Length: 82
Image (tube, rainbow, N blue to C red; front, side):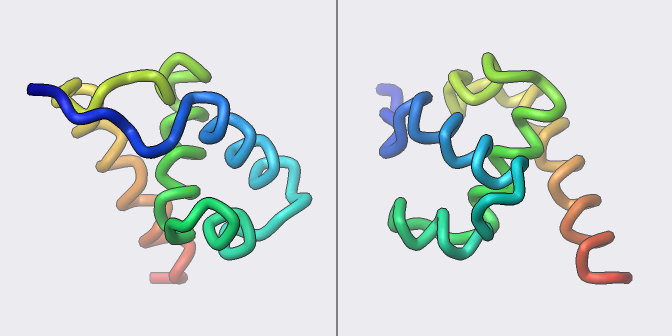
């Protein structure tokens, strides 16, 4: 049985838009949604690699998710300056 996302497509898109515009920090967006900043960065990475439709994909899209996770790991690695 599939798991439904706690966050709607619209919520994810609004969060990503705020983050990418630079109008809010990941921490403030995450706090308002009840999640963490890493999740906002994950959504932004998905959005940048797959577009808005990527935010609609179910977690069961394993091949696509692996690509997204690899991109996210690279971004986090670079953001930490390592």
